[in-house]
Length: 387
Image 1 (cartoon, one colour):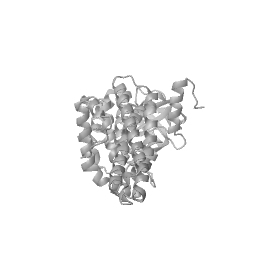
Image 2: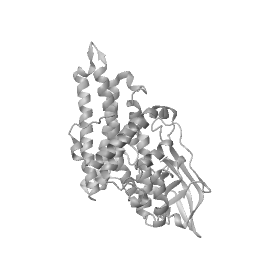
Image 3: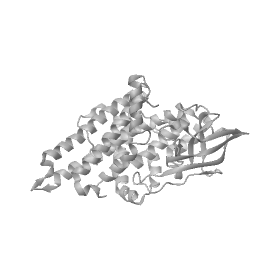
Image 4: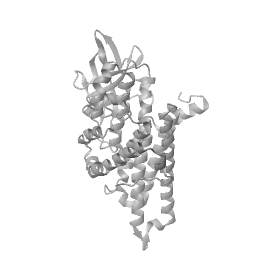
């Protein structure tokens, strides 16, 4: 089994449950994800068969209460699970992040008891799949400018608008769609098959190819009264969801970093040039040390972030710092690994180019590098630079 990268003995800071879940997901990725991922990536197909297995492992909604069929574990455990999934592929982790942080979380946090009782157990097992509709064709970094509208009618609402870059959209049974109702942003549960609602898949991606990315089109879609998220109110509600997803991303990309580092280290020790392994050259060692340093820093950052989150003390700016730093460094680690592997780095025999291409998307979704810079900048100065 994959040993992992742990230069500072972070293992000693984890409890038994955290280690057990990490090891279970690590084995699952090694045995069931890695053997199929390159083919699915090349064919641009998401392996739906994996969804039920994620449910059986308890990875969907891992932090939510057991009464909804969830594992009710801590946030560090959730982070470690995302780390191991992304060692397999960012697309797998993205699926799990969306299901847990962007679908189950808003239903749990803003939904009615009836909505929670019906949807959460089904989403936890993977029987039902969900997606999160916030981003629009013309409104990405500025979600508050969204054009999707909800109009109150007898017994419900009429929704009109379009969403874009929606992970899981085409394969989803339920979409958490954000729309303006009388000028205020509210959340709505839009069920698959309802008249006027479609979710065509977006094709032609060079990144996240083993993940489903879709548009959501709403044309005079009637939503019954019971499908509004009653506790959702304003832009703060979807941003709270994004915070959950960003937290998972900060952990997830460490898995990509580990995969790239491990591949580069093993290659450097076995690739012979000038009658000796290239790992003996100073410049190669410098690259490996850089990679190990960034992985270690990200691991320590994530662990403290998770402990703060479990104590209810974490801030959105701290999550932004972790997402911003770790995504940027993960992409640099992937590129450095590609340099070490040389021409072989572009082959599917190695995971490096796939991770590098995926990380180009991971760095920009759930808030671009620049937006997180301004979030942190406002937090430390008290001055907003968004306008």
